[in-house]
Image (spheres, rainbow, N blue to C red):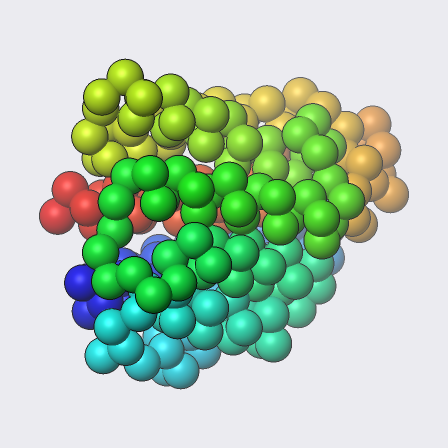
Length: 206
């Protein structure tokens, strides 16, 4: 299972690296123009530093978070790093992935991001994609859906979250300097987060 988790992380890394320019262009419109570059550098380091043979999923995610924290610049490093490290606590000592654990990991990631970034939904951040996606994932799981089907619905919600970020002004980070002028632009963090969820879904569909 740990090898599969590593392979999934590698797929996420490849997705982020493939979309490096797209993410950077989004960030150029409202931020520092470095989100894609920073995230690509961080995930390149992840696939180089994480041990694919480590049987503990929690260890793998913790190492991922620590690597992102130390290699991704700007606000994204601490936020993504915290999200992975908080998710790691849910999977500590586990070698199999279950739907309830994944739900718990998403919720832990949200709590970590909120604590680290003092952010809430509706501030044009990654939470505008992650929070509705987690709500829908939890609802579908409770209805008896498979992890893949629940993730399918969650990805739709995450994409709706991206669209939502186009309608609101940023109140966090460098984009907040633009105020109302940030309306009309989609948030790069919400976009990279959605790419991550879509990659996990596609990987599990395998």
